[in-house]
Image (cartoon, rainbow, N blue to C red; front, side):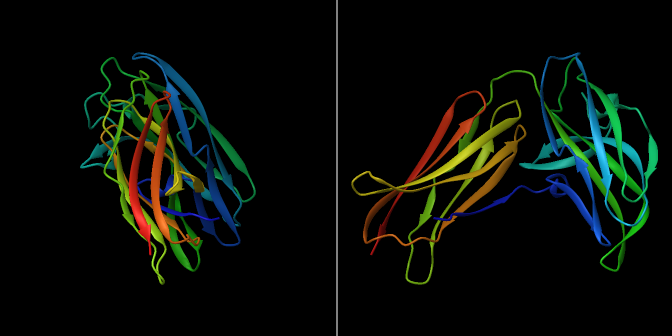
Amino acid sequence: MKVKISLCTGLLALLVPTLLSAGEGALSAAPAVVMLRGNAGQSTTQVLTIMNSTSQPFSFEMLARDVVVRNGARSFVDAGKVTGSVASTAVFSTKSATVLPGEKMRVSVTLTVPANPTVRAVVTMFHGTSKMNSYGMHVVASLGTLLTFALTDQVSASASPLEVKAPTASTNLTLAQRLANDGNEPLFAKGMLAILNGNGILVAKSALPARRLLPGETTDVRAEYPGELLRGHYRALITYDLQNGKTITSAGQFEVP
């Protein structure tokens, strides 16, 4: 049994995982995401790694930008441009450098959560300063790590009613809904799809990709079940387990003629 899942999240496509093909190899940065928990006024030091598996040198400078949510989607904001900026506190062990082909380099960054933070995420970036040849094009690469900051365990999420389109002779069963972080802390949600027949017996089950949502952020979730279902009445459920042990469940019914 296979379930096809697609999700739309807006920005930060370069982060998960951070990868750029160039020549016969690739550039990569690790880790892709760091989830942190602490208190206002505390500092954290993280080690970031850039790996150059290409045949070209990669020159970069280190930058930190706040990640804010506007109209449900993420945006990058230059350090210090918003009140309560965390990116403005970034101190890097190296401001700029060049990674030669086949080498990797580690850069540490120290960030401090201000007394009244309004930001819950920062992206630290290996911002390219030299052009690289990628599939015949000269591009400037920027690779980075997303760091989220939680101050409490009071996470909260909401989901729109589950939209279910029953399978037909030419289409698969599809499900869609919108998941939102309606709290004040970064959210980590693990999703699970279950399909029950008219007798309440489980006939299909599959995990959905885990989602990380910042406060105010929303994402569209779509699932497609390509397997065959016998004629009858069914109930589809999508359940999200949040990092504080809470769950939210949405259900929808459909008929297979």
